[in-house]
Length: 341
Ligand code: GLA
Image (cartoon, rainbow, N blue to C red; front, top):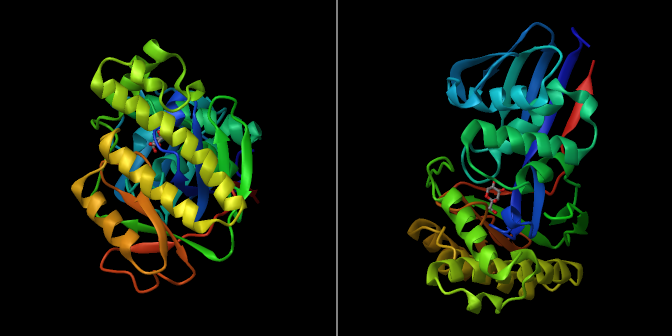
């Protein structure tokens, strides 16, 4: 109701394994984390007015906004994307604060979208509806044809668990994370934006593969040999292998087989580097250093690639002295929450 004080927190996510599988309805294994975005303020009026701790420029978005991609400053496009998709009955005035690195591969944009959806449309209720709306807002704001993983992890996270998500059926199965395992996220320092990146081209190559061998989510590894184009074949090989690795990683977590989990992470990174071509020399060097550190089971780039963050799984405390990069030992956290006073 207008005038009520609303506070929404939405976490970022780290993806343990399963990258570039969600846009063909495959499997992913992310966890919501204890780095988050908070939107706080009051509903009312005919505009959404937000100040951010990440940008001096205020976002002022009328409820009747037509094209989110035209809105300035850049971060206000996400606000406009949510306004267009959520069609809130009234505006909102407040602040956005975050502990997430912006554009660092920990889903700062999905956390913002999810926090905004719940601020403007608290009636939406279930995590999947919130996530779907946030995903459509991202498409509108950036034109990047992202999958559902980031928004669903942010909206539907479970403390102490990763989420095994089937991005076709949208079934979500929480998988407990063993308490003797550290999940460490290291920032490569290489900034990246998905807009203007080859993300859309990779998604199109996956569709080209599906035109030859059918839905990638149903195809067993090896089926890709039927694809004549070597680039498209390599993209498909990554996706088929990655779906199988996600399944194996969920089993390894349940069985506390950390060595197997680590090996799967290392294979995933190699596949993203060699077959899907979304790694960078900076990410490769960082993954190499982490994977060689004592007590580390495995490491890989996390998220879309092209820069951003790397995730490592390690024995308790093994990376406590890591440097020189910024790093976080992340705790798998609950999804977004809403408080109204
Ligand atoms: C970005 C997208 C996700 C997913 C990952 C790669 O984070 O938003 O939907 O495709 O890249 O796994």
